[in-house]
Length: 103
Image (cartoon, rainbow, N blue to C red; front, side, top):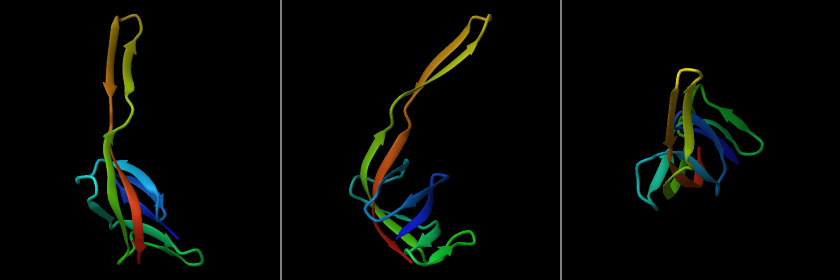
């Protein structure tokens, strides 16, 4: 059994028990989270596809971590112009564990 959900403008294929890193969500560690934007649901034999979303479908999860991803370096450079800009960035994320999928 799996579903495809939308969070933070991205689509994720999830199953029960999966740990997923999504864009930052509000909430503390242990808080429940629900994803109502379910695009697809499959139970192994039947597949339901939303137009564009499935009504009455919900994926429940709980927050297990709030954190920052690894640092990436943003470097801008123009040759022969003595132009260099170096900047770092760490994206915030929320790790959630999928508890259940209900249709």
